[in-house]
Image (cartoon, rainbow over all chains, first blue to last red; front, side, top):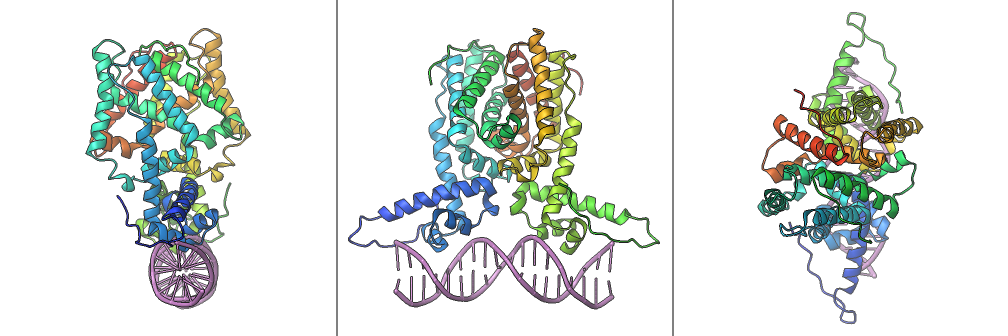
Length: 223
Length: 223
DNA sequence: GTCTATATATAGATAGAC
DNA sequence: GTCTATCTATATATAGAC
């Protein structure tokens, strides 16, 4: 999955890699916007270069080629995801843990909508660049998440809802607010979704899904 | 929204439009597959022409240009959607009507996954080609759908769940099975989602969402 | 390390023979 | 109505001056 970064040497009077780090971050930020808007094939290196204000030759110097830049963007996104999940355990109180998980997913949709959209477009397009990510470890991680629900069900703490489809319900309903924000704004007459919009949507999701699983929502905790 | 079809005349010894109709259908079918996989900008007229087995000049002859073909594909998809919705009324029994709606949406995801994905990619990409579709009529239609839930709530037939976010919950959770089928297959070790997979997912969605709205699911009716 | 100029491939679109 | 050949624009990528 990793791409080759061309060897180079730095000027002695400047800290090694400072310019590189700054430029790479700027390029990645511009690339995220373009890839989120046009997908991989629909994005041109030229448009990214113009947005970041560098000649496109620099993009090739830093990331090798277009696929290398795209994979770097995807890697950054997946790092974000890994940091957001993994907070559910069988010992948790189901209602509290599930509410926390829905809040975390909605907060991700609010703060990283472009990342969510790039991931969505990649999966919709077949997800070939994610084949290394969709591996045995990923399946094992997914089973461990489903096992938490199974444990709660076995302990009689929640209704016997199929854990696999419950997870897809959680993902689909929360990611929708990032991926389909354009449609939501058009339908509700907004120009963008506010923090308040997300809070209300989060409350609705927590209320419906928890009750649907036979759980009593915990008292709202301050954001 | 409509594009110009070039004027032409037909040979007198052949029924007018027979060849055209057949070719246009074949081109649209191939275009749906390509656009669903690569999005608008990522799809080339050449790839569509090769898939359908016609020279690409024919595609331009029938649809004018690439955007015309894309809009024709989108129009066909939106026609499908219009035929699927609009079955909820305030007079319906909420539990039965909602279960029916979830079934219809899931059946759409199962039978028209490519259509769902093209719509999703278009919305994620900003939905400029849908700006004519996301108009005042669409907003009015959406409010009429939300009003059905409000009527049910006012009549005490279901919990006071915010109708707008409930609709997004329904859309997000059902469309997920079409748009993210690749990820679902990787996670569950399947090569494709079967009718049985969809039936089980549908049952889970109906069970959780209806109970979450304070409704008692109706007895399962045969598909 | 940076950027201009350019090589090469492929895109959308069309002219014109049949 | 159909299809070959071609035009023009733009894409990725790189060579080489600075």
